[in-house]
Length: 190
View 1 (cartoon, rainbow, N blue to C red):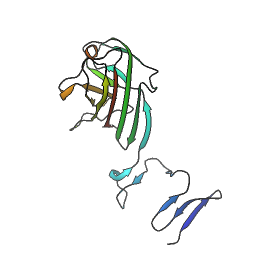
View 2: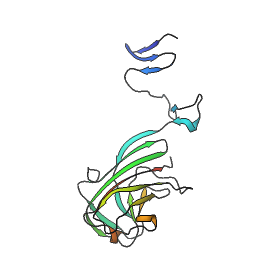
View 3: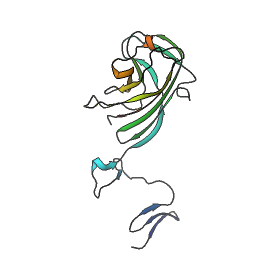
View 4: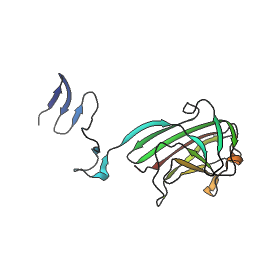
């Protein structure tokens, strides 16, 4: 098959050959929603269709799982370089990174310590869990959290101490200079 050039508005933008489609400039867009790229198959199957990809940022915040509210001030403005979350969503899986830098804290109780503000709601609880994260760096905590689990049908991570046996509480663990970096992933409900 000879090369075929598809032109529009006087520009040679798309070249078709017997083995490749080349887009010289611009983006590859689908005319209707719900379409995507089928990988590793010779026919369209939903399980092999890449139909969702997104990158962005979100603002993580410490939250109370119980009824006693916690009030936390953050270094810099939430969403700044000091307290920020970033994510990449591929299909129904979200990969995230979180930095939280605490400047002040008040209120709270022995309720469990969560981080709220994930960009998408997770699946409801399923066999094998929804996902979670690992604290890759932390300082100025009374009892350092090490891991977290993404709670079902929510946008929160519940933090856990070593061994996953118990979660830290607000008043026992956060200080006015606590700092955390967390990375992880979870499945979304969409």
